[in-house]
Image 1 (tube, one colour):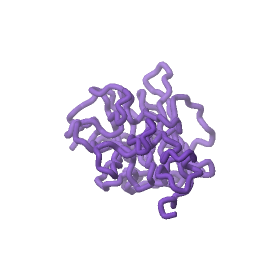
Image 2 (image 1 turned 120 degrees about the horizontal axis):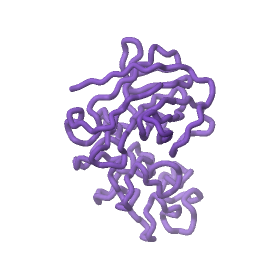
Image 3 (image 1 turned 180 degrees about the vertical axis):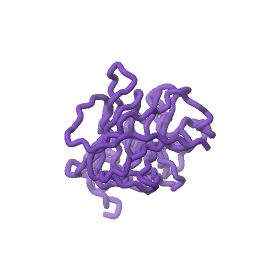
Image 4 (image 1 turned 90 degrees about the horizontal axis):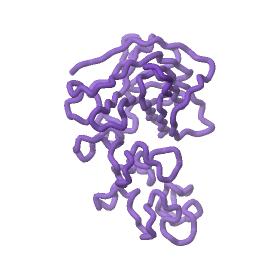
Length: 275
């Protein structure tokens, strides 16, 4: 296997660096956060965190080959980073897990207690199957960033968003072995990649949510074994899929006020089914 390592400068940044681009995130307003910034060659950046936080940002086009980005993650929580170039092209897409080096240690996960700037990350723009044995466009080896012994970050190999414990983030598994990872499937056949499909407008891709809070992302959760993810089923036959339906049992009471609904995505009563 080919291993790629880059040495990047890393410095504490005391102020927010203004940065545009699209953003989707799930974080708690009360959670302290740290910012990761840098530049990339036109990229989608994602953070997957152990507390369930998911954030995606697109780097800002600025007329150069080094586009700035900033992504905010919870402090002192283990997170993984994935960066993707050519995201909208199935043939040339390059999905790169980011690894980390600190001193003599390497890790796939980082935990921050302050802001960091990763300088320029020279991600690949041309897909090379030599780095991708199974052809799913996820590079087999991470691109390692040297953190220069920063005191703002710790690294480890904690499993994050990996319900089957196979070493891969669930979003970047290829569950049906068709050469397309889960993030770039189109579960509801609406012409949008899962990663950009947010039908309930909660700034979080529908496929990666966990509506029934069982530890499995919606994409791979099919409890009734009907070959359709449960979040796309329409259990009450009202023409609205379960994920978007805020009255899932069609009793006229919104799920967040209903003690007997079965759609925890709209439900504040986690113990309904035992009521």
